[in-house]
Length: 134
Image 1 (cartoon, rainbow, N blue to C red):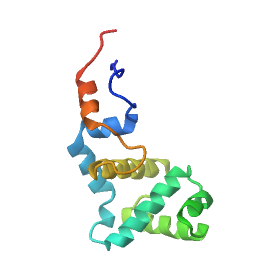
Image 2 (image 1 turned 45 degrees about the horizontal axis):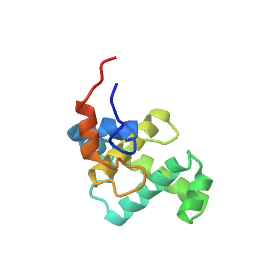
Image 3 (image 1 turned 60 degrees about the vertical axis):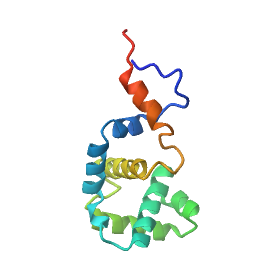
Image 4 (image 1 turned 90 degrees about the vertical axis):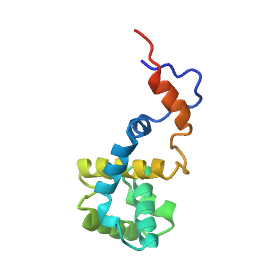
């Protein structure tokens, strides 16, 4: 069991897992999102933003559309493009899990400039080295 009393806000478990193996996390993101490589960066940003909004909306295209200020069908069309480019369909739970994990790894690698990402990597590393005997 880890002692987290002196490190501030808790690090989300998935972030902790990805930060524990940065090279593995980067490889996962590259593999899962490889279909987006080489595309126009604006197009990639649009598709990634749509995926993130869809996940934030718990899979609701209507709520994702509201957050993105677009029509629900626009979200559906973008998710279809993501599926065509990545070979992963968000309606399949395994594919959705891979996409979500790859997006988290991508954000962490980019420096965690958005909400909810691990806030203190140094503290996480301190905690991961320290264990408490049961």
